[in-house]
Length: 77
Image 1 (cartoon, rainbow, N blue to C red):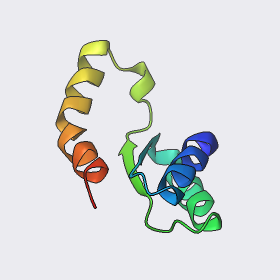
Image 2 (tube, rainbow, N blue to C red):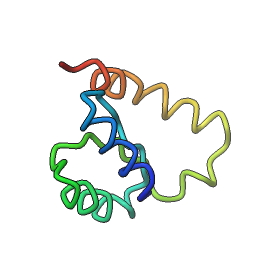
Image 3 (cartoon, one colour):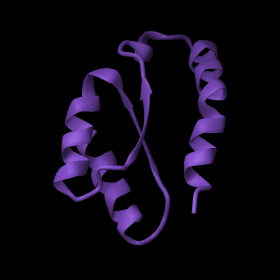
Image 4 (cartoon, rainbow, N blue to C red):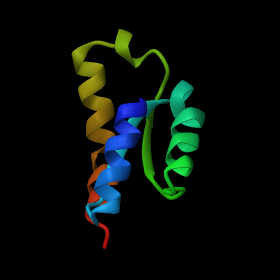
């Protein structure tokens, strides 16, 4: 999680939109890490805890459902 937020913060600092994808148990830590780097508005896409036990089909369906939000965040000005 920390590396994802760190990488996204660096991208955002360079003017490149980014999305940090993490699970809900890491969201408070992710928000704190982003705030510590000066990026309170960093976009997070939050997956449910335990998704790593899902089947490939379940993960694919979940990410397909979330793709518009991810693309929207990456396409912002």
